[in-house]
Length: 377
View (cartoon, one colour):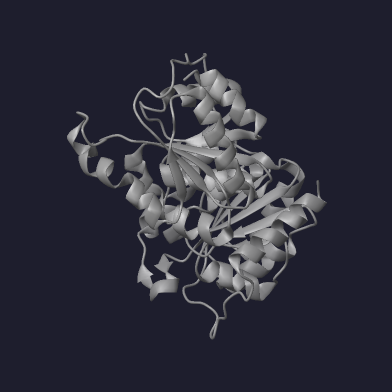
């Protein structure tokens, strides 16, 4: 099938934002998306789903591309992000290890269970035809599912797409411009105190995304408002979600509130964020060296220099924050100057006693956030 013609059909249906991880079966479609559309190269497949989901929140129709081995990496966001929040992404997953064909040994089992996995995740799917006219009809079907906020995946067999040469990619070098490291003792405020400061700095153009667990639950208690999103799963994906949203809505400020356990789980996202460097994204790490939501087990964040890592990944500004006063000062400064910024603050272990849970469902949170975004459009 002619890859350009297929890509143009996707464009006609409104799909022009892609994120993914390379696969030899999908290389021609990936090349097309890089040449002709917005393509975000994710560090892993789960991050790609989260990036596409963020852009979907921002009103874009999005596509994720991955090898079927990477479908296993994407299970968490596909089951605990796109499903509860009803974020419909269109997926293309290759069929490496197709039964009856010779392939590498690591693909044998995955080739047998790819479609079963999609069924288990309640994702509608079809084998993509290599005949263009048939594929056009399939795209219409897929779009109908997307329009009712359900994801749809195409399973792509070998040699489905004709060759598409990759044009020369411009890859600007993103360098850190400002960095401050720890220079005196930490105040160690509670998470609730820290969230109060972050929340009172927001304005009418701010979207706040809180990582899963106690962070989202405590932000809900600080103030439940339509420009908040409380992650309920897909641990580690909040900054990738923020990246997609920030790129889709450059007119709004996206504040990502992360945790040490969460960031450690998908630290490759820092490299992707730094490479695409949305100036309207502020990434705040609340670090208590603990998995607070699951019993207080220690993380290994005590051994990690997050400020250096974010700076090395291309964040324009990366600051160590010692106190709530310093945190408020840097947030207010960011609102004036912008630039992809990372703030790392150490907080106390523990959380509010008798902490409740959001009474709004994830799908309700998404709908009201999208209404907020659309009102700002």
